[in-house]
Figure: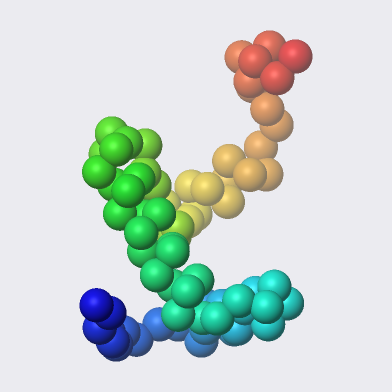
Length: 83
């Protein structure tokens, strides 16, 4: 048995879904059902600190700190790690 569900999604997510669906010849309902099933399986099987959100929100203070770090030179420890 299948049921219809309704949800509001962002315009860019809808566009990505439509583009993928069209280019791969898949029905949107099939993609959505599989995506939900995959995500729920990950939530059940993986530790909670492994599943990361697809986006995060930060405040202006954090944004400024990130901008400062982005423009600074890498530390010696970071250089050692990369090498």
